[in-house]
Structure formats: structure tokens, C-alpha cells
Amino acid sequence: MTRKFWVPAIILLLFFLFPFLISGGERLSIHLMEKNQAPSFSHLFGTDWLGRDMFFRTWKALQLSIGIGLLTAILSTICSFFMSTLAMLNQPMDRIISWLVDLFLSLPHLVTLLLISFTLGGGG
Image (tube, rainbow, N blue to C red; front, side, top):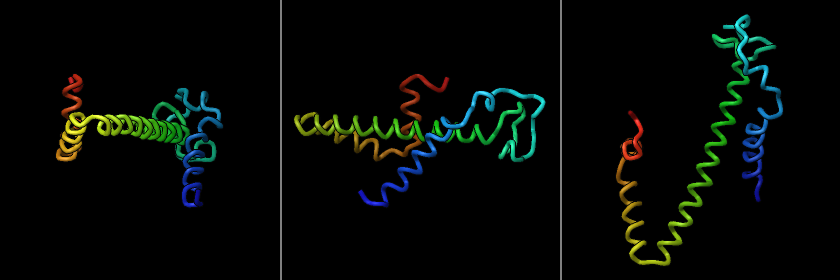
């Protein structure tokens, strides 16, 4: 592997693992006496209206976003592998999968998400 791959992978891994390394139980709890503080050395991004440390909350949100992104990338890879295997082995399945791919590529992403949400019963 080249250096072009390893440097971003190590940075991504550090961003994902950093919130595990710092103690977070106390920083995520509510401290009403420390609410709405300006950034300082004790709270690098300040505190919110409940007195929670915004720097740690930002790192936890970044960790969650990276985790969700990696999970969806892995799941989409597995799903596409099985669909391509089905399409390779069976001619009618190849036509159905090709039709589905053309359908999803022809619709804008927002319309596709709305249709999926409506089909699964979301959105009230």
C-alpha cells in the first residue's frame, strides 16, 4: 500500500478512537453551574445551555458519524457483492437488478429517500 492510503486511514482511525481515550462520563453530564461558558482551557469549545463540554460532544458526534459512514460503506459493499453474484448467475435476476440500478440512478436522491421513507412507514 502506498503512503497516500495510510496517512488518511491513520488520521481517520485516530479521530474515531480519540473519544474512547478521554474520559467522557463527567464531560457529558449536566452541570448547570457551568452553562454557556466561553471557550477556555478547561472547555476548548465552551459549554452549552446545560453546561456540557462542547469539545467532547463534537468529538463524540464525529466518532458517531465516522462509525455510521464505515458501517454503511461495509453494508453497501456486502449488498452489492451479493447482487452482482446473483446477476452473474441468473439472467432474469440480471435484468431485474439492472432495472433497479437504472431506476435509482434516474431519480434524484431526495426523491428516492422520500419514497423509501414513505414505503417503510416513516414521516408520520
